[in-house]
Image (cartoon, rainbow, N blue to C red):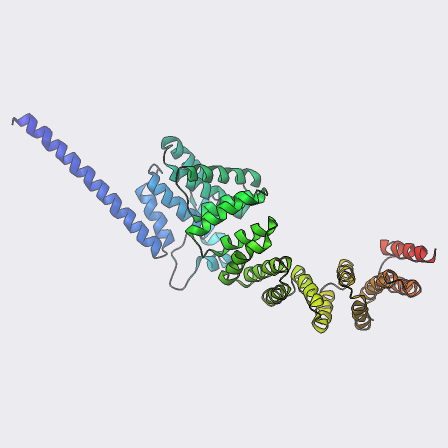
Length: 404
């Protein structure tokens, strides 16, 4: 072998060794970054991936950056500036996000949408990039809605489009399938939404939000009984009291619509304990108590409901409609009499009660008592409201109508 040929082979092997070394070094570096993520050292992890590919040319590294930026930031400004922290033992991101101010951090400029769109043009067959772009738009939709650079409706279409394209090419996860289900449900395509929810649950059966979505979707699609299993699972999975209370309320509605009244009452009671004084649930619970013949609890709850907004005319109006629908007009009269004593020194609340008590008497065909009650209501309101208030005309019209 001549000298020139030997030199050529030597050069080739040196280059090969250098390339192999660079690849090995990159792999070791990426492994180090992954270790930092597992150790919840998110600031160090982002700096690690940034040092490997500062120009955002490597799809593998960019995908890691996007994941870190969207899911492990401590603060973000419009999903184009991101701040990170290295967590200490016992610290949690969610807690720190609530208490720490933006001024506490240095922000990195990183625009996932711009970078991913550029890489998609360069690597059109890498549908991981499309899926990651779907993650970006879905995250932005959830957290910013109309407060981003484009309207929320456009963000909806973007994440649905990119997630759909990725799915068609075999790239998806439980979260992207949930987002596709969410999109279909928003536009009332409940059957398609259910398909996506079920696919998502197959990948992650114990995701509370997906189980909740699948159950609620059945309810919206007028198949409440079929959604009970999912909603019950969501109720069991949620640890947050507000979310658990909401799941209990929806489960109660499902039981009610499936004619399982005892189960419905039990869930409305649980929801009331988990999310006290939530008016919609209180009304469901009250109706269930009336239908179960539980007069004493119904009396107490009706009083609690009124006490929360004693001058709001909608509250006694709702009570009036419900009690009459359940054939419990006399029971409501008992409640009105009790509340009138309690609110005798609150002229506006007293007038509000007497106005609706008068409506009850009128609807129960007791016109003379109704007129007297309306007049007393007028007197009470006159001590609290200006003479031009619309309630006085309503009362005068009712009195005139009855007298006529």
